[in-house]
Amino acid sequence: MAWFKRDKDSIQDPVPPEERRVRTEGMWEKCASCRKIIWKKDLDANWQVCPKCDHHFKLSAVRRLELLLDDGIWNEHDANLSSTDPLEFTDTRAYKQRLIDAHKKLGMRDAIITAEGRIEGRPAIVCAMEFGFIGGSMGAVVGEKVTRAIELATSKREPLVIVSCSGGARMMEGTTSLMQLAKVSGALSRLDDARLPYISVLTDPTTGGVTASYAMLGDLNIAEPGALIGFAGPRVIEQTIRQKLPAGFQRSEFLLQHGFLDAIVPRKELKAYLANALNFFLS
Amino acid sequence: MKNPKRASASPKRSFDNPKSALETLEQDLEALRLRTGLAVANPDELDRLRADVAALKREFYANLSPWQRTQLARHQNRPYPLDYIRLLFEDFSEIYGDRLFGDDSAMIAGMARFHGRPCVVLGQQKGRDTRQRLARNFGQAKPEGYRKALRVMRLAAKFGRPIFTLIDTPGAYPGIDAEERGQAEAIARNLREMMRLPVPILVTITGEGGSGGALAIAVGDRIHMLENSIYSVISPEGCASIMWRDAGKAELAAGALRITAPDLLSLGLIDEIIPEPEGGAHHDHVAAAALLDPVLVRNLDELDGLAVGQMLDRRYQKFRHMGQFFEELPV
Ligand SMILES: [Zn+2]
Image (cartoon, rainbow over all chains, first blue to last red; front, side, top):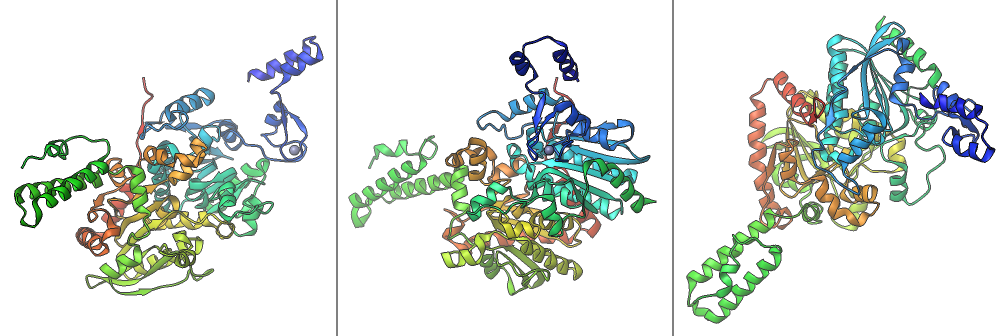
């Protein structure tokens, strides 16, 4: 991580304070919850959880797998699957260009990593969504990769964990994206028939077509604290009902209260929770 | 009698504005009728002109823009599920409520007979006037609607009755109460459960197939779309306001999203297009139902010929193969 180095350099460099300000820009993060300023490296060392107030920032798919899988090691599957841009969709920018930009930024071909690794010694299929890739949206590639992961869990008789972080179905692939909801949910019906555990982890945000398919179909549906979780986005609801939404609406705690989450688990306890739950299901 | 305009109005000619070409032809026809008077001096010419008009009309309706089809799909006189039920099914007996929270009148479900055979039929019901629209919540179901649908479909499965679903909704209702009662969970559960219900499921998109709220009763063995229906991940207006930040770009979005029946057939997402009477289903409900009926009969017959395991496997594979992607990195 190059910015660790730059950080050290800037401290050692005898630069005037105003110049240092410019050069250190981008190294700070203001916490959306407690408004305190945090060093980005501290935040990353703390798995993107605010050291001052425990606010959960978004965690990248790679870091998520490092958090959950033993020794930070996994076998990635289907990393080369990429979108065909079936509709040749263009709005203010070409979808093809958005895909290229996201790939350049993240080195990923689409918005999910599907992998096989171990959770406290137990082999598991684990998928982690990447919000940085077009809002973690689900098109044909995400739908296919998740379906293959579920089918692999079914055939290898291994438990499945999917960590969702998504704005929903990917508009730029049109109705094909919508059909991924049915495809993935269908694969989950077979995993269910095979009586294999599936734990769905909902993180901030999980909305739209991802919530209305695999994110809500776990044997356990658990969420990180304070995550936005819903079917319709808050703005759409506000426009429909023409009134302000109550505080805390569609947050993890709201869903728990209304009976749609089995537990809220802080990020640092997530791996232990998963290991324990899988032991309950499988040992 | 020679009509100099005739050649230029031939349906083979490519035209930018079929509507005005049609109007010109109709004016020609009227002029001819006036000139010939009651005697009809040249009946052959009159017949040819009439045939031209009919051909142009067919071509016009075959080449509607995605936005024009969206308007037809939403037409307030379009037949709704209760109209098709009245015209195609006998002895309909509505089943209300999800036995968990309440009844949802945006979703109708019930027992019926199809050509004498007991079945279950369900669909989203819009209202035709303001009072009905409010009562039906504009055809936007809440969780209790999807849960009622699943309850009735399970009843069909238990007693081995086929399921017909008729899709016509702008989408699942986006409101506080719907979220509180788990809109996403209700839809997700239906998707998973419909994939394994051991009875034939015949899905017909009759009007608007609005995203997850449509799909929640649209997982089945056969997916049919009426010629002027649409099926989309998001409404053209919603897409326009997000992607162009301008809801006025809906016409553009309707084209970009490829939501018409021919588009979806070519993308491999539906099985068959049901033709509509000339000018659209709203012109003639009886004719529209009559065009749908034989398709349902034929497909139910085909599904009857399959063992349950085979039928479920094909249902799974149908959705399994939706969506294309590159397997290897592009060079
Ligand atoms: Zn904080």
